Amino acid sequence: MTQHFLQVEALARRFPGPRGGEPLTVFENIHFAIDKGEFACIIGHSGCGKTTILNVLAGLDEASGGAVIMDGREICGPSLDRGVVFQGHALLPWLSTLKNVEFGVRSRWPGWSAKQVEAHSVRYLEMVGLGQALHKKPAELSGGMKQRVGIARAFAIQPKMLLLDEPFGALDALTRGTIQDELLAIVQATHQTVFMITHDVDEAILLADKILLMSNGPFAKIAEIVEVTMPRDRTRATIHHDPQYYRIRNHLVDFLVNRSQDYAGDAAAGHDPRQPPVVRPGLDGGATVVPLQVHAGHSVPHATESTFSHASA
Amino acid sequence: MAGNRPWLAPLLSLVFLAVFVGLWHLATRTTAGEVQVDPEYAALVGAAAATGGKSAMPGPGDVAAKLWEHITDPFYDRGTNDKGIGIQLGHSIARVLLGFGLAALVAIPLGFVIGMSPLVYRALDPFIQILKPISPLAWMPLALYTIKDSNVSAVFVIFICSLWPMLINTAFGVASVRRDWLNVARTLEVSRLRTAFQVILPAAAPTIMTGMRISVGIAWLVIVAAEMLVGGTGIGYFVWNEWNNLSIANIISAILFIGLVGMLLDTTLARLGRAVTYKE
Ligand SMILES: Nc1ncnc2c1ncn2[C@@H]1O[C@H](COP(=O)(O)OP(=O)(O)OP(=O)(O)O)[C@@H](O)[C@H]1O
Ligand SMILES: [Mg+2]
Image (tube, rainbow over all chains, first blue to last red; front, side, top):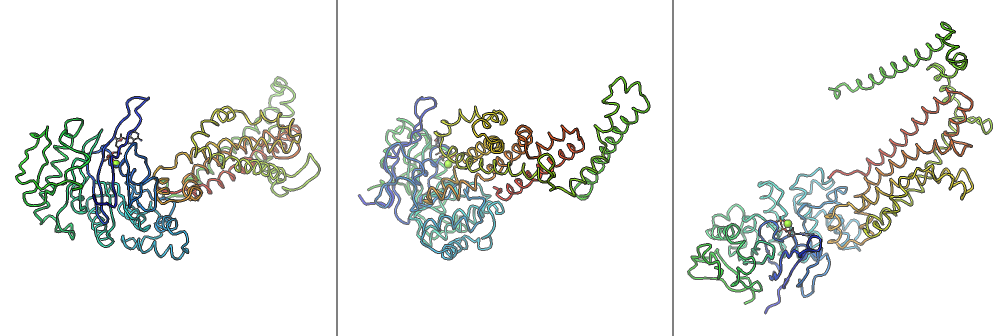
């Protein structure tokens, strides 16, 4: 078994029930791994526990069971090794754009002079196209600009891994597209390892190397791991010319619409959460659906030659 | 509507003032007039009203003259019972600032601790709930007995009444700092001390400033009553002394000055508050 950069093993999170009642198990038996330089997206229905997983990865929340190992060490508590872009951008509203980024940079390199800190921060703000807005307060920025400051702040500390919680969820489609392109360019240039939550199927296909499909909660699981087999140099403008695109997209939508609820309880007897099936629906004749033993008839499995393998083959 | 005619509101204020002064003038003149017209009525309401009617309730002219006297010579000192209104106000302001400042030194750090720790909050809550509604003047005898100095006692009373709004607002402001901002600091491994000063303090500053503004307002209300009790110096003592002298014009002048100083304190704090306010 190869050593992955990030390894999530048997992760579980339970919240105490109301007034000492049954505890709520948001998810358990979550297994997945991310390699260095890989871009992983996770999609699943609202409330299935995506943010909860991300908070555990960030060290902001503690798991009830299982472990997360990054770079050979178990994660306990937040660290500058993992940069987080929060869903609500979470900029400090009394600080200017530049000061918001400097706040993290100063913490990352406490020995640096004020000049060094500023130069470094400016560089990252320019990278996200905000060189002109260094001294604006967050309230004076548009939603997209705020989100870009959040991204610059996370990138500027040069973390080993980037965690993004629906970073573009609150943006209009046009702005979202522009920032997706920017993120894509930065990630391709820096080979940053990324874990990102999204609700947007197209966004996941554009950005990700692999997409983790999460089934509905409670007791949510990683149902499948979809490999995006299209070449890495995709762009938003050309991606839909690739025939793989629609096959992957159909597969994801089919999961979200038809299959995400099939994994609850014992229904998924044939599903081994420790080794969620890896599928490549983009490839010709790729497995459109990995049939569950029990619910096999639910969606029509017309996979002739199944190309799925296992996570840790 | 009012936006493109900015002088309209001040003009209306002047009209209101003129109407008020006019009515005041008429009211004080009629009393004097009635004495002459109807001596029987004067006999009915009593000699005090008849003879004192004019001197007891001064008209706007008398008060204006008195005011002018105070403004032109605010700092004279002719013994304990005859000091300029500037000196008296100075004593009151000094007491308020001292008591308020000491209260801020205690309330803001303590409020920080309470706001950061739900445990400390729960432990101190019953004390705060009981102590908060006590009229600050109720502490006065206790203060006089233990401190044995009327001046310090007055400061203590101001301290006590300024304490609660600042304490409660600081604790509330600190406790309701957005989780996201604290998480940002945590993921950036910012030290606890830096988090306190660079995240929690600026985030809670507007709420803290609101508490300070409430405190200074209450303190200015209380100082007048406190000085009436302890005597010696201060605007409260001045009012009480003029009551004994039956100089209503002086009392009215003092009331005006009390209002002016109160407004000044309030606007200063409001301005400071605006300086630390941020838009989300
Ligand atoms: N502090 C908490 N106490 C109790 N239950 C919680 C708590 N935080 C989250 N949950 C529950 O955990 C589940 C997963 O929440 P989470 O925020 O991870 O969902 P999500 O997948 O991120 O949803 P969304 O896509 O809407 O953001 C929800 O059912 C939620 O009610
Ligand atoms: Mg979420």
